[in-house]
Figure: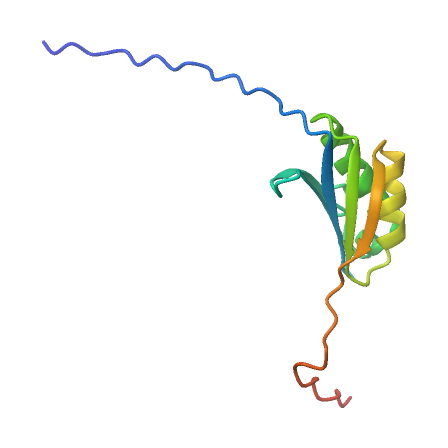
Length: 132
């Protein structure tokens, strides 16, 4: 008879990282607002969006949905000890300013705000106008 070896799985306890300062990227699209909280190296700590916060359809693009999404992301980041953040806002959606207010309401101190919306320097030719 062959001896069957028992495999014992050890439970690996992960230590929560303490990250006091980080970076928040807010992508405010025309249909949704996505808030991503990253550490100083760029590794994602927490994220939230209007859709994952429970809003569906046209309500996802509202400023209130962006504020709730930012509060949820800030709450998740506070579990990692995040206190101070640099904010980068990208996009032309309705939730730009309201998402920043949601971060403040979530208890994060904002060190700087920068707009990183991509703007063309007259690179590609524009689409032809649509005929209806």
